[in-house]
Length: 261
Image (cartoon, rainbow, N blue to C red; front, side, top):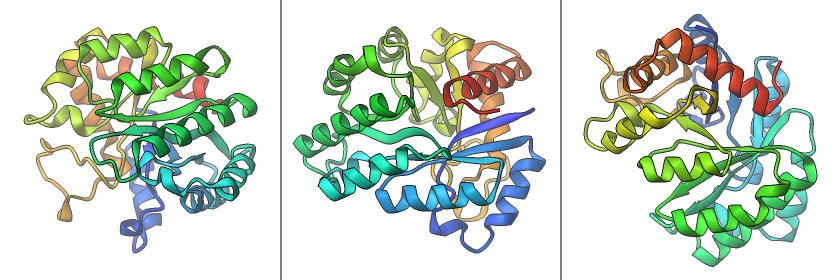
């Protein structure tokens, strides 16, 4: 497989002891390119710096809804500057998360809108997060949809109705190891039967969401990009397609949306 992990938190401190080895294991597993997720201004800066050192890496620049209250005028200006950099291929991770509400919903909505506007001005796609906020999320997205250069519903965990809404909005769908979870993944397993190959993308969200059905789970349950082929095979089972066809489609979709070569 020649895979692109579109969502890896490779700057996470759990990778500090062995980041080069993690990247080497990913390459050996066929994960030859990765998009490093920016979740705060500082994390976006770190993701861009890491990508600048390794040609197989790209990065996003954004403020996760958990940190929406941190998006003041200075942070917004810096995020705008970062988003215009060549190494940044998408704006985000941005969106709404009412499950935790680590930032007030009003702050989340303002931060989400501001980042969609950055996506419009830079012409870059958006890397989207939504949890327990489907109605507000889609309402805000619809207001900006006509001017955006596409986007992906990162770490999609929803049901078939939410999937159909996102497909109607023109979004790609990012599938993680959530699909391997026999406790929480049943709605997603059913939904991906309706997911067309030209909209699917794959990601680990490492170090989070290690696939629960791995025969030899990693110590400490740290997820890493080398496990992406496992997610591809599981997803292909529920989509009722060949894993190699899914891998090729996901890579092609990722290259097209993010402008990767």
